[in-house]
Image: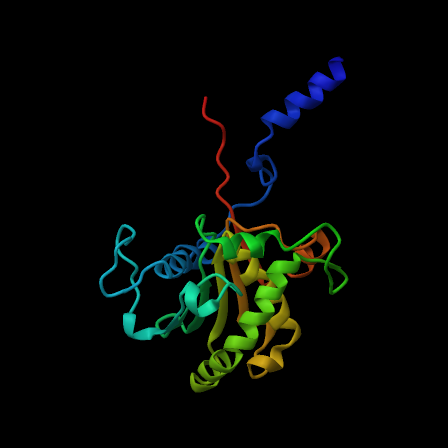
Length: 227
Protein backbone atom coordinates (compact mmCIF):
# COMPACT_ATOMS: atom_id res chain seq x y z
CA UNK A 1 0.00 0.00 0.00
CA UNK A 2 2.80 2.41 0.95
CA UNK A 3 4.57 1.65 -2.31
CA UNK A 4 1.43 2.42 -4.35
CA UNK A 5 0.94 5.69 -2.49
CA UNK A 6 4.58 6.67 -3.09
CA UNK A 7 4.24 5.92 -6.83
CA UNK A 8 1.00 7.91 -7.08
CA UNK A 9 2.51 10.86 -5.21
CA UNK A 10 5.51 11.00 -7.54
CA UNK A 11 3.26 10.64 -10.55
CA UNK A 12 0.92 13.45 -9.50
CA UNK A 13 3.64 15.88 -8.41
CA UNK A 14 6.02 15.37 -11.34
CA UNK A 15 6.46 18.50 -13.43
CA UNK A 16 7.98 18.97 -16.85
CA UNK A 17 10.81 21.20 -15.69
CA UNK A 18 12.39 18.19 -13.94
CA UNK A 19 13.28 16.77 -17.38
CA UNK A 20 15.53 19.68 -18.23
CA UNK A 21 16.77 20.61 -14.75
CA UNK A 22 20.32 19.53 -15.57
CA UNK A 23 20.43 20.94 -19.09
CA UNK A 24 22.64 23.97 -19.82
CA UNK A 25 20.84 27.23 -20.48
CA UNK A 26 20.46 28.23 -24.11
CA UNK A 27 22.79 30.93 -25.33
CA UNK A 28 21.45 34.27 -26.52
CA UNK A 29 22.24 33.32 -30.13
CA UNK A 30 20.42 29.99 -29.79
CA UNK A 31 17.31 31.63 -28.33
CA UNK A 32 17.26 34.70 -30.60
CA UNK A 33 15.09 33.17 -33.38
CA UNK A 34 12.41 31.85 -31.02
CA UNK A 35 10.40 35.05 -30.28
CA UNK A 36 10.72 36.10 -33.91
CA UNK A 37 9.45 32.77 -35.24
CA UNK A 38 6.64 32.78 -32.66
CA UNK A 39 5.49 36.13 -34.05
CA UNK A 40 5.37 34.68 -37.57
CA UNK A 41 3.24 31.77 -36.30
CA UNK A 42 0.89 34.21 -34.55
CA UNK A 43 0.65 36.28 -37.73
CA UNK A 44 -0.94 33.29 -39.41
CA UNK A 45 -4.02 33.82 -37.25
CA UNK A 46 -4.54 37.30 -38.70
CA UNK A 47 -6.79 37.91 -41.68
CA UNK A 48 -4.96 41.11 -42.61
CA UNK A 49 -1.46 41.74 -41.31
CA UNK A 50 -1.77 45.43 -42.20
CA UNK A 51 -4.71 45.73 -39.82
CA UNK A 52 -3.95 43.16 -37.12
CA UNK A 53 -6.53 42.17 -34.53
CA UNK A 54 -4.32 40.12 -32.19
CA UNK A 55 -1.00 41.93 -32.34
CA UNK A 56 1.47 40.97 -29.56
CA UNK A 57 3.25 43.58 -27.48
CA UNK A 58 5.58 45.47 -29.78
CA UNK A 59 3.73 44.27 -32.87
CA UNK A 60 4.61 41.47 -35.28
CA UNK A 61 7.67 43.33 -36.61
CA UNK A 62 7.03 41.83 -40.03
CA UNK A 63 6.82 43.41 -43.46
CA UNK A 64 3.38 42.59 -44.94
CA UNK A 65 4.88 42.90 -48.42
CA UNK A 66 7.06 39.89 -47.68
CA UNK A 67 4.09 37.59 -47.00
CA UNK A 68 4.10 35.24 -49.98
CA UNK A 69 0.99 33.25 -49.16
CA UNK A 70 -1.60 32.92 -46.42
CA UNK A 71 -4.14 30.10 -46.50
CA UNK A 72 -7.52 29.47 -44.87
CA UNK A 73 -9.37 26.31 -43.86
CA UNK A 74 -11.35 26.57 -47.08
CA UNK A 75 -8.13 26.41 -49.08
CA UNK A 76 -6.49 23.57 -47.17
CA UNK A 77 -9.78 21.58 -47.16
CA UNK A 78 -8.89 19.69 -44.01
CA UNK A 79 -5.57 18.41 -45.33
CA UNK A 80 -3.57 20.70 -43.04
CA UNK A 81 -4.13 23.58 -40.64
CA UNK A 82 -3.91 27.01 -42.31
CA UNK A 83 -0.37 28.27 -42.85
CA UNK A 84 1.63 31.29 -43.91
CA UNK A 85 4.74 31.57 -46.09
CA UNK A 86 6.97 34.53 -45.30
CA UNK A 87 10.18 35.59 -47.02
CA UNK A 88 12.14 37.23 -44.23
CA UNK A 89 14.77 39.14 -46.18
CA UNK A 90 16.06 40.85 -43.05
CA UNK A 91 17.11 37.53 -41.51
CA UNK A 92 17.59 35.70 -44.83
CA UNK A 93 15.00 33.04 -44.10
CA UNK A 94 12.00 31.52 -45.83
CA UNK A 95 9.47 30.67 -43.14
CA UNK A 96 6.48 28.35 -43.46
CA UNK A 97 4.45 28.76 -40.27
CA UNK A 98 1.48 26.53 -39.42
CA UNK A 99 -1.24 27.52 -36.95
CA UNK A 100 -2.34 25.40 -34.01
CA UNK A 101 -5.44 23.39 -33.19
CA UNK A 102 -8.73 25.18 -33.74
CA UNK A 103 -11.15 23.88 -31.10
CA UNK A 104 -14.19 24.44 -33.31
CA UNK A 105 -12.84 22.85 -36.50
CA UNK A 106 -13.81 19.21 -37.02
CA UNK A 107 -11.09 18.79 -39.65
CA UNK A 108 -8.39 19.49 -37.04
CA UNK A 109 -9.75 16.77 -34.77
CA UNK A 110 -9.92 14.31 -37.68
CA UNK A 111 -6.27 15.04 -38.43
CA UNK A 112 -5.25 14.62 -34.80
CA UNK A 113 -7.22 11.40 -34.25
CA UNK A 114 -6.03 9.73 -37.47
CA UNK A 115 -3.54 7.56 -35.63
CA UNK A 116 -3.06 4.56 -33.39
CA UNK A 117 -0.06 3.08 -31.63
CA UNK A 118 2.34 1.45 -34.09
CA UNK A 119 0.24 2.45 -37.11
CA UNK A 120 2.84 4.36 -39.12
CA UNK A 121 6.47 3.29 -39.44
CA UNK A 122 8.91 5.82 -40.88
CA UNK A 123 12.69 5.94 -41.19
CA UNK A 124 13.27 3.24 -38.59
CA UNK A 125 10.80 4.63 -36.07
CA UNK A 126 7.17 5.54 -35.67
CA UNK A 127 5.34 8.75 -36.52
CA UNK A 128 1.80 10.08 -36.19
CA UNK A 129 -0.12 8.82 -39.23
CA UNK A 130 -2.45 11.81 -39.70
CA UNK A 131 0.27 14.41 -39.17
CA UNK A 132 2.56 12.63 -41.64
CA UNK A 133 -0.21 12.64 -44.25
CA UNK A 134 -0.68 16.34 -43.65
CA UNK A 135 3.06 17.02 -43.99
CA UNK A 136 3.22 15.08 -47.28
CA UNK A 137 0.23 17.01 -48.62
CA UNK A 138 1.79 20.32 -47.60
CA UNK A 139 5.11 19.53 -49.26
CA UNK A 140 3.34 18.48 -52.47
CA UNK A 141 1.33 21.69 -52.35
CA UNK A 142 4.17 24.13 -51.65
CA UNK A 143 7.45 22.51 -52.76
CA UNK A 144 7.51 24.45 -56.01
CA UNK A 145 6.93 27.78 -54.23
CA UNK A 146 9.56 27.05 -51.57
CA UNK A 147 12.08 25.89 -54.16
CA UNK A 148 11.48 28.99 -56.28
CA UNK A 149 11.93 31.31 -53.30
CA UNK A 150 15.15 29.57 -52.27
CA UNK A 151 16.65 29.73 -55.77
CA UNK A 152 15.51 33.32 -56.39
CA UNK A 153 17.26 34.40 -53.21
CA UNK A 154 20.62 33.00 -54.22
CA UNK A 155 20.15 29.48 -52.85
CA UNK A 156 21.49 30.80 -49.57
CA UNK A 157 18.49 31.51 -47.34
CA UNK A 158 17.58 29.30 -44.43
CA UNK A 159 14.40 27.26 -44.73
CA UNK A 160 12.36 27.38 -41.50
CA UNK A 161 9.32 25.25 -40.77
CA UNK A 162 7.44 26.32 -37.68
CA UNK A 163 4.17 25.55 -35.97
CA UNK A 164 2.22 25.69 -32.76
CA UNK A 165 0.43 22.74 -31.16
CA UNK A 166 -1.15 20.67 -33.97
CA UNK A 167 0.78 22.72 -36.52
CA UNK A 168 4.06 21.95 -34.78
CA UNK A 169 3.59 18.24 -35.42
CA UNK A 170 3.00 18.88 -39.11
CA UNK A 171 6.02 21.20 -39.23
CA UNK A 172 8.29 18.67 -37.50
CA UNK A 173 7.35 15.83 -39.84
CA UNK A 174 7.56 18.15 -42.84
CA UNK A 175 11.13 18.93 -41.75
CA UNK A 176 11.98 15.23 -41.50
CA UNK A 177 10.67 14.64 -45.03
CA UNK A 178 12.53 17.64 -46.45
CA UNK A 179 15.93 16.71 -44.99
CA UNK A 180 15.51 13.24 -46.53
CA UNK A 181 14.36 14.61 -49.91
CA UNK A 182 16.29 17.86 -50.20
CA UNK A 183 16.09 17.69 -54.00
CA UNK A 184 12.42 18.64 -53.63
CA UNK A 185 13.61 22.11 -52.57
CA UNK A 186 16.45 22.51 -55.03
CA UNK A 187 19.07 20.51 -53.13
CA UNK A 188 19.06 22.72 -50.04
CA UNK A 189 21.77 21.67 -47.54
CA UNK A 190 20.59 20.02 -44.33
CA UNK A 191 22.21 22.72 -42.22
CA UNK A 192 20.01 25.31 -43.96
CA UNK A 193 16.84 23.59 -42.74
CA UNK A 194 15.39 24.19 -39.27
CA UNK A 195 12.15 23.57 -37.45
CA UNK A 196 10.73 25.36 -34.41
CA UNK A 197 7.95 23.33 -32.82
CA UNK A 198 6.14 25.44 -30.21
CA UNK A 199 4.17 23.44 -27.62
CA UNK A 200 4.72 20.44 -29.89
CA UNK A 201 2.30 17.62 -30.51
CA UNK A 202 3.67 14.12 -29.96
CA UNK A 203 4.42 13.08 -33.51
CA UNK A 204 7.47 10.78 -33.57
CA UNK A 205 9.20 8.10 -31.54
CA UNK A 206 12.18 8.93 -29.34
CA UNK A 207 14.78 7.48 -31.72
CA UNK A 208 13.59 9.81 -34.49
CA UNK A 209 13.49 12.79 -32.14
CA UNK A 210 17.15 12.14 -31.30
CA UNK A 211 18.09 11.53 -34.94
CA UNK A 212 16.67 14.88 -36.05
CA UNK A 213 17.56 16.92 -32.96
CA UNK A 214 20.02 18.97 -35.00
CA UNK A 215 17.23 20.42 -37.15
CA UNK A 216 14.10 20.26 -34.96
CA UNK A 217 13.93 22.57 -31.95
CA UNK A 218 11.06 22.07 -29.50
CA UNK A 219 9.95 25.13 -27.56
CA UNK A 220 8.11 24.24 -24.34
CA UNK A 221 7.08 26.47 -21.47
CA UNK A 222 8.00 24.51 -18.35
CA UNK A 223 6.69 26.18 -15.24
CA UNK A 224 7.24 25.11 -11.68
CA UNK A 225 4.18 24.59 -9.53
CA UNK A 226 3.11 27.63 -7.56
CA UNK A 227 3.64 27.50 -3.82
